[in-house]
Image (cartoon, rainbow, N blue to C red; front, side, top):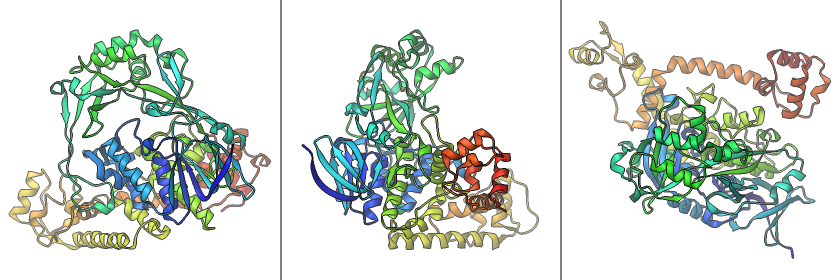
Amino acid sequence: MEYFVDSFDVAVIGAGHAGIEAALAAARLGQKTIIFTISLDAVGNMPCNPSIGGTAKGHLVREIDALGGEMGRAADKVFLQSRMLNRGKGPAVHSLRIQADRRKYQEVMKETLEKEKNLVLKQAEIKKIEKNPDGGFFLYTHLGAIFSSRAAIIATGTYLEGRIIVGDTFYSGGPDGMFAATGLSESLRAFGLEFLRFKTGTPARIRRSSVDLSQLEIQEGDENIVPFSFENEGKDIGGNKLPCYLVYTNAETHRIIKENLRRSPLFSGNIKGIGPRYCPSIEDKIVKFPDKERHQLFLEPMGERTEEMYLQGMSSSLPEDVQIAMIRSLKGFENAQIMRTAYAIEYDCVDPLELSPTLEAKKVENLYGAGQFNGTSGYEEAAAQGLIAGINASLKNMGKEPLILDRSTSYIGTLIDDLVVKGTNEPYRMMTSRSEYRLILRQDNADRRLTPIGHKLGLISEERYERFLEKQKLIEKETERMKKTFVPPSPRLFEILNKASSSPVVTGVSISDLIKRPELSYKTIAPVDDTRPLLPDFVTEAAETEIRYEGYIKRQKAQVEQFKKLEEKKLPLDFDYSKINGLRLEARQKLNRVKPANIGQASRISGVSPADVSVLLIYFGIV
């Protein structure tokens, strides 16, 4: 028996990292919102690894925070260890990563959803979705309840027709022993959406007391903690609580894996879905890199009050007996007890070429996708898409212009542009190399780039915005001071230059010119900088970066201007490109599939050549 329950402005299906950000954004923008989850115990779950951030992913988290999202704030509340990755490289690739207390993270996110005005958190599986006469949707639960919504956001993660695989054992299921979401794929296919089948893997969870940690290489966190949220700059958010450990595979590990490859579903054909290129299973690594003598693994805590530890770098779908043997071949793991066996999971996801840059489905008005449903991997990629989907569903309901971030504004813009313009044939992962503008899209200036947008939307409070404006004034003022402040030659300056193996000076030199020398820094020349004001580190570091990379930044900004000129050359969204005889057949097919909004997007479509772009410019009379 079916029965109607209630109507909403926005309905979010799935309460993982994408669903959380989507629902919070919609509710905070004044939309009556409901978020569905198969289990309330799975809200904000971290089944793949207990961490937030990492290379390029840390950029996404800071951008989410700069727009008014929640992930960064939650991460600051629950971290066990914090590290800034790539400190030995330039600031463009510095990326923050925290080891999270997994259960605390879930508790924080669940409580945040529960306390949010305009938001209902509901345990229910959505089995079917249909268009209603008003242009919105009817959503049917497994218990027969019917809800209606003006807009719907699909954020199903790896649950959609999920299939768990361990060796020759496979069954319907979601991550961490949860049920799979069944039936919904059929409803979505009925809308004409095209689907992909992807897979991902998880490593085993090990009992801490069963490992001889003294045999492992300890990995401590940073002494000076950098928060994820810009709201916490300059605040004490606590220190590291637990270390991580390094361990390496060895010849015996590799022998065990090689001798059991015939039992691997990855090579036997039992796994049909396509896995992530940049996070392969351990058996895949052994096959693809046969000459590599060892692979680095990380033993990471799951929380302060649990014995579970996560063995990152050793995801696998090998049979359980093989997993036990290969793990016990590791140094210090001779008596290791596996608390959770590693597994692979296959799931349905939409072909992201079905989506527009707003993350709305091209074929189904008011239907949005976010997260792994869109073909991505990773919590951070999911949260970023969820935030944008929630914002755009709300803006459309309110009759306002959508938010579309382009590649020059953010990693979020790069992520979405890559998905909806280029598509993907494997789970997409964000990397710094994917951005051609990474020097100006640093994690430290995410607030400068995006907080004004978040404030305009209504997701950044007036109080926070005033603090942001004051910070920018301090950075600009200090940058100007360094350019205008000159230091005369002196024994102290000579000593500093000599110690750093830097060439001497014979006349006065500006602070900014000294900082531009790679062997010097803001801190090393402090003894001769008499007018240096007392400022927070996050201000001085930003000013130093602007000075040090001034020439490169100017060059990249010029590239951005060229990029924007192409983005401004608009194309009709409903045009049939088969009418243009000058285009190659592949270009016509790809252009009709993607329906690019402008020449810039058209030029990034795989299969569209520069010659094809020239034909478009001539055909549409674009100068």
